[in-house]
Length: 447
Image (cartoon, rainbow, N blue to C red; front, side, top):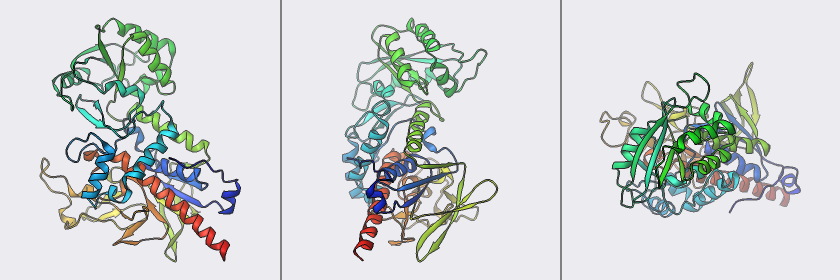
């Protein structure tokens, strides 16, 4: 269940004087936080140094895939895992906030972008043909949730060298499915130049070419003759970028069988589609989207951040704030850093970074590549149940919150938990800010 849209010009928003919140980061956590705050009546400025990590992802939503055993029911697994791992973000976020975040995202983007409910795992082939668990997927991938006895033909494009059809087919063919059983798979590779003379194409250039109705019909008709009766067709995830629904429908109709996309190496077109949808929605709902600028610090007064400094062309500027949400990601985005002296830093607001209990800085990285997980990747900022950033259980600043990969305690890519953490923490942080501002306004009225 999600909050209703409340305009800042409404009586409710005027009554509470529309708090101004700066959200730092434009990944899934940042965009979800911004939209949640905006729909709750806040003024929102989203500041980001780049386009965000969604474009590197597969357009899917992982809630929890491994604990380390493979998960079959993500929401149930979150609840159980949180109870056994109090240091994990899910212990603070809770399964209800994760559900709320998933439902909110589905409402924002619609069923043409995501299907699934988070109650049961969807298993999809990866870019190398392994079978991975996830929770929500684009409709173009759902037929990749294969079952015993399925027959698949993996169609590769010779000009698209980031998609290895032969390797994918071989691995699908030899892999036992999570629920038992096997799939037979073979590969076919055809020539397709998205532009004349383009022999080394990107996924995006192919997707843009297939947005053209004539081009996609020519390719689909050419592929049709390679399909055997009863086979499901697996294609690289390049079925359009702006006209994706039409491209998928045309391929399914012309080929006359089930079709699904397999995500390629990053950057990945389905991730770009999801990113574009969320950014356009945020801008349409009047989130002030500041791209290409980095938050370089903040001003603190009486335990509260009163403004953030943003580096812009020519000279920096100060943005006054009622609250800040740090959603800049982890080590992969540079929000967290281990310097040459072995010291940890949060690079945006200089917040304290917490380490796993019993681990010293000199032990954050060990040399056994195939051994136990590196403790470094469990580092991040500490939060309370409202996602307020804390140190030793006490707020660092009374109005600074965190969402997504910057939060300590999870190895997201190993657990397949990244999007669930992002969505749940975004909901918690945004709702806590809205509640705090409204409570403060009500107190002022009584006084």
